[in-house]
Amino acid sequence: MMWLENIKRIAVATGVLVLLLGFMSPVGAAVRLPAFSLPSVPDGKTVSSEVYKGKALLVTFFATWCPPCRQEIPTLKRLNEEFGPQGFAVVALSVDEGGPKVVAKLMEQEKINYTVLMADRKTADDFGGISGIPTSFLVNKKGQVVKKYPGYVPHALLKRDIEMVLQ
Image 1 (cartoon, rainbow, N blue to C red):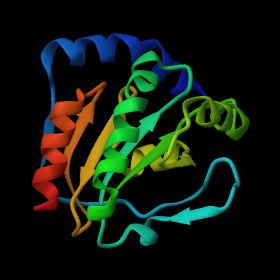
Image 2 (tube, rainbow, N blue to C red; image 1 turned 90 degrees about the vertical axis):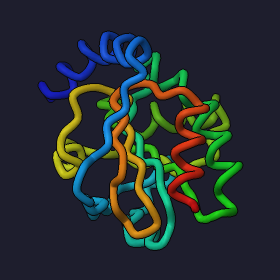
Image 3 (spheres, one colour; image 1 turned 60 degrees about the vertical axis):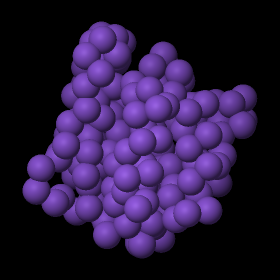
C-alpha cells in the first residue's frame, strides 16, 4: 500500500509542523460525516456510522507506529470520558498495515476507552483524503463535519471545540 508509506514519511514532520503552527482548519460549508461500516478492534464486529446518529464525534485517523498519534491517546481517553455522558464519542480509525492484532495490543497497553475501527484507503478518501496522521474531524450532533485538525492537537483546544459543538 503505497499511500500508507507516504503517510509514514510525513507523519512526524506534519505533527511537528502542526504543533508549531497550532493549525486547525474549519471545514467551511457543512460537510456530512461520511457513511462507513468498518470492523472494530479487537472483536472484528462491524460498526456503522449510523450508530453515532445524534452524537457529536471526534473521528481521528491514526497508526500505532505514529508518535504524535500515540501522544494524543491520553487526551482522547479524557475527552471520551468527560464528554461521553453529554452525547459525545471518540472514534479512532486505524490505518495500520499490521492489522487488528497490532492495534489491539496498543489498546490493551494504553487502556483505550473509545471505539477503534480498522479503516482503509476508501474511508480516508471519503473524508476528503488525509495527508498525514493523526488527522481528526470534529462532527456536531447533526452529523456535520465542522473542523479538521491535521496533526496532533492540544487537549485544551479540543476540549474548547467539543464544548462549543455540545452547546
